[in-house]
Image (tube, rainbow, N blue to C red; front, side, top):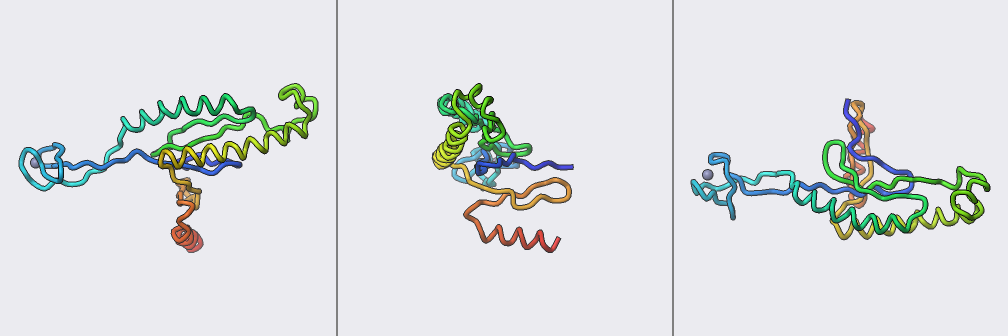
Length: 177
Ligand SMILES: [Zn+2]
């Protein structure tokens, strides 16, 4: 049984990226080339995909600082990065409090304001986080995707939001299946 790779959220879009890069590689010499030529045997190298763990690690480090700053100003949510179950990384927004589910006393206790003010602040925080995510996604080369299909084995398909043509194809496949 597979599981969906990413965690989707109720109030926030899903932004994801991976850290797969390509290198020139000579399988005969088991070495890396440059400009398509093996430095040992001179043969034409192949392109080989690999997981760029250094880039992934640097990204997580840098993002931790950025998100700590952002989270310090948030009241109801907390933003983090999260590795996919099988590949890639996503932004994940955890909801710590939803004042819609609290009564007036709870709202005074937790937020020091009445329920209607807390709900207004909660809604405006959702908008604020959406702006933060959009900005970070653009800056760090994330794609906005959505879960377009979940197969019987639990595996999920993610489709780029602007890629509507592919979305239609996936939907069509789903209808046939
Ligand atoms: Zn070689």
